[in-house]
Image (cartoon, rainbow, N blue to C red):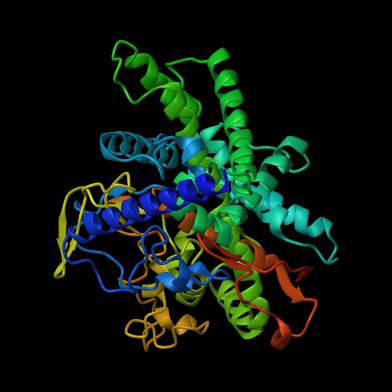
Length: 475
């Protein structure tokens, strides 16, 4: 009996080795792949990955040419079970992605040009935040929830047609789930799961917790859709959900329409999640940088006094007259690099790129072709384009006369066809929030500037700021 078991194990191992070697040979026939460490069958380059910081292992040249060839959407197994290829910002591809992206951009633009523009929504919400900060009376606070709620209410007013009270328990719970989801997606385990999801999906682990968080967010969106459906008037759309419902109604006779309830829920979730976390993370990291470099905060306040004064609220038109503040915000975005790994792209056809061949064809163990990660962080810290790439240096975005200087390699919102649809909204929010807050408050750290640690707490899919407290002292 023991001999039979041993023989069975030996044969199973032998068969596994043959399958792995066959797959390796099939993969190697694809052509000349880009340079890198030699992969091991099945494990790939896992042994070369730094478990405590996977992003550092992937710093290769960013792919910025041949946009059509790289316009496919790669897989992210950590959240694929939630999205299943639906939604518009991150998970869909092909014709579905084109249709839903075009629609989302149109709706966002329409709400920005309506009777009550997005800028007015941001200014109003900034006012609520300032009230919250005044109520702290200069006591130490941890800013995450404050910033998440205020930023989220801007996108909530667009997608749900309403803002939420800061003390609303459901709203606070949603903010915590979004923040926790972003942290979970950025943990080292998530990057390993994205590599080996087809195997690890059958095992218990933290990926199940992330799945539950996103499913809870989906349930909330679905409940908001039902509320809209109950009072829906096609002649008077109130928000993004209403606009999508109109398209569902118009296309009801088309069984292949992309305007359906599943895409509505997941596209709305895309907007809600991205419109909450990325800007609030940048603000939170920005506060930390300004406390570490108080001379930069002082120069911003000086420019605010010169251009805006201390009484009227800042407006978007002020930005053109405030080059130093604009430069600081850009430098915060560059140093923060909120989503350094980027959402994976996939080649849409067999692709020749700078002398290398990236195959679309499948292999024995790979369900699709070559995934490409647009490593934004590599260009944002390239010394060819930024004089002091690892330092916080606002002069990167100023010319010798002190005028704002654009930099074509500033690609924090990605580039090409998958450029972030919320870029314009995010830029408005960052300028109005930073100037509104610094106009009324000084940022005070609980430790001396030299002791402030600005290193990422976690670096993976996203760069997560350290947890800290600060005091907001009224001028």
